[in-house]
Structure formats: structure tokens, C-alpha cells
Length: 207
Image 1 (cartoon, rainbow, N blue to C red):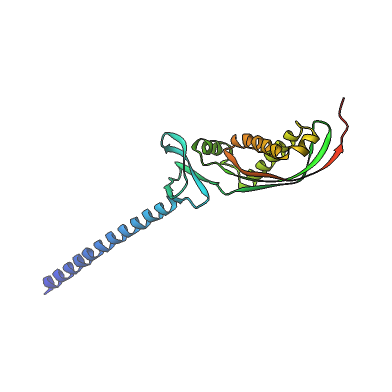
Image 2: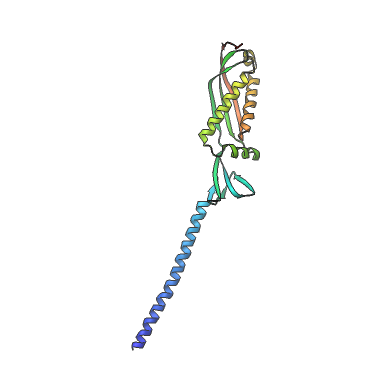
């Protein structure tokens, strides 16, 4: 009886171990799948509408970065880092921006300009190098400075009479000057319109 009882005890212990092994294996597999799913979730970076996803780091097709305009990409922590560039329009409003003409007169200019990130590959590369670490507010401020400087520079090369008589041509020259400066940042001018020009206060011309 004792021997049989002992056999029963031994068999019972063996059965419990056999039952625990599959449970441990299942738990390990479940934990591994959970960890894998979490890793994929952390590395999966979608590219929303109105954005360009830029992936920087090693393994980006032999370059230091690559980008996508839709879909998603796999970003490996420690190997890659990612940033977004906004493709939505930036509006720049000039309200009574004073400009001095070449004949020493001051004209106040009100104008509206619409600017966006270029979608040309070469221009996107420029934007990555120049803008990738700047926020949207900083980029908007830079664009506003470019517009104001280009408008003032254009007016400084013409007379007040030309400004009054050749407004459409002046608007075109301003837009071309603005686009030239924006191209260095990978940006482009969508539209530009001078709404109003007023005043012609004569300024002393330095001798």
C-alpha cells in the first residue's frame, strides 16, 4: 500500500509539472508577442495629411535622411530619428510696411502673400537641411522677414512715380524677389498681391 501510495504521489507530481510547462510556454509566447507588438507600435510612424515625414539616421538608402509624403514608415529607436515638415500654407500679411523709393520718398505698402513648402525633391532636401529643427512659428517668422525685406529692397530700386504707374509690374518683381529667397529654404510662393500703396512723404537724401 505504501509503495502504491508512493507511486500515486509521484505520478501526481509529474502530472502537475507537465501541466505547468505548457502554461509557462504559453505565457512566454504571449509576453513575447506583446513585446513585439509594442515595439512595432513604437516604431511605426504615420505621415498625416499636410505633412512630410523625414527620417534621419543610418540605413536610409545610403543617405543621411529620406522622406515620405503619405503612408507610414518604420523608425528604429537609437538608429533613426524623425521629424515632420508642414506643407500647409503660411500666410504673411504686410500692413503699412514702409518702403523708401530711390528718389527718397516713403510709401506704405499693404500686401498678402501665401507660402508653402515645395514638393520638388531637390527643394525638400533643402528644407530638411535648413528647417528640420525649427518649429512652425519660427519658419513663419523667417518667411515674414524674407517677404518684408524683399518688398523693401524692390521699392528701393524704383522711383515713387514708377511705383504709382507700374503697380502690376512692381507686384511681379516683388514676387520674383521673394521666390528667389524662399528657394534657398525649400519654400515656394503660392501667390502674392499688393493690396494698397499710400503716402509719398519726401525723405532727405543723404549726400
